Image (cartoon, rainbow, N blue to C red; front, side, top):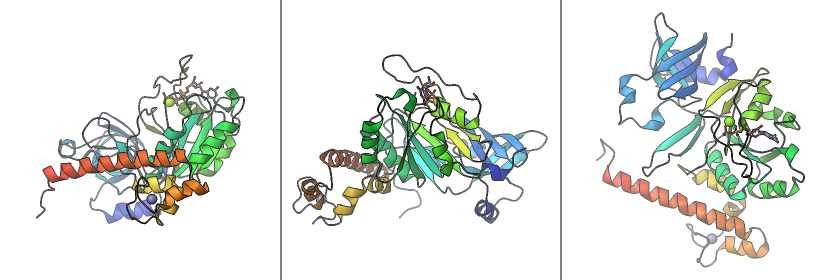
Length: 342
Ligand SMILES: Nc1nc2c(ncn2[C@@H]2O[C@H](COP(=O)(O)OP(=O)(O)OP(=O)(O)O)[C@@H](O)[C@H]2O)c(=O)[nH]1
Ligand SMILES: [Mg+2]
Ligand SMILES: [Zn+2]
């Protein structure tokens, strides 16, 4: 029998839970979600849960609904291993992206992660620009961000990949390992601790589920051969789910993500481009885009070598994208002013 503490419950959660309204509610954590049906970890084992009608209403913001990793308060259905969701506890961290499609909708990938392993492979999957983008989004979540370079066993020379990863990691730890052979997997130990939750994100086929299987010590999760030739995965994992590590700790498996569009990313962008951020305060203009502006400290950094052209170009593209997203959001609020406002 597992305990709530195994899933990360602690005194802070308990205080938060008892401070909120709702007598007779049970605390539980969202382990997985499938089309509005939730699987939960509760004090006496697994529970199934559903949303009450009011929460399923179209006008309810998607981000306010329970996401995988959330701690929630539920009302048990007497005589069944089932419950109804009544409240979502405030999230400590929140990994979000913009849902695909035109509309500005926040999609929560996971809540309450302590760390995120941004996973890529030491082969043609590796892409410094995509890694930068993933790191930016993961840093915005508030969780610690770590870079995993997998498939070390199949890579004759990891040095160039390591150098490229280090250039975009901006202080994040980079770990080279092999899920297949288990080489250097022990280097993940600092993040795999009782009560701590770590999420794996990355493209399809990089070996997230293989690595989780290795850490769990089972072949529990389905993994699949990458297509010969292009090394692209086939989206073997189809939903997000939490798993308990036998030695303590909680792991989140996610389906491979092709897109990682920004929701909010201001903090993440500053952290992921810390060398640019550090110089930006010395630019003449506070909102300097480090383009055509005069007295730009970042462009001066290009001369001195403090900033590389590739990094500045990447920063400009991401900052522009973030700005465009914010404009869409502003227009939406302009057309539909929040209710109850003046
Ligand atoms: N050589 C080698 N192959 C690996 C390693 N890790 C995973 N693989 C292989 O890569 C393929 C994809 O692995 P998965 O674990 O399914 O990848 P995933 O990231 O979970 O993919 P999605 O679920 O689609 O997101 C499988 O054929 C694995 O056997 C590794 O360390 N070395
Ligand atoms: Mg998988
Ligand atoms: Zn500037």
